[in-house]
Length: 114
Image (tube, rainbow, N blue to C red; front, side):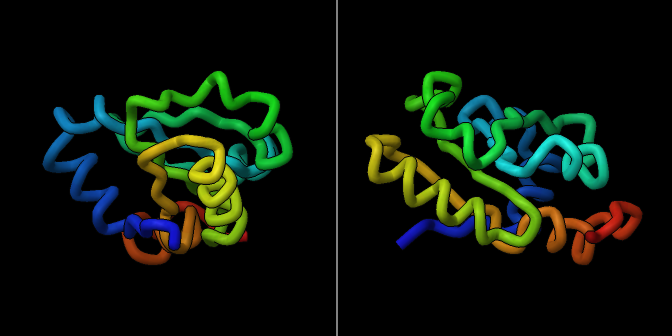
């Protein structure tokens, strides 16, 4: 079972615990056009953008010593990637429940849904 991380928990981390962000690597597995259309805008938010299909070839860009938070549009692709990473030896992998769509609906309605 993939551990879930809610957009509320991410928002709290960004707003109230930015010092804890060093322990995390956020990985957005959406396509480049999706990132252009809708992305989290926050002064402390940083992510590594790797489209889902490229994850197997680009695993070296992921940090095994950090908690990996995988995100996509609604949580489906990110859940698949999180499962793949767990089975490939990454010890701490979390799925952003609901993805950027949940972020738009619950945290920042100025971000368009698609």
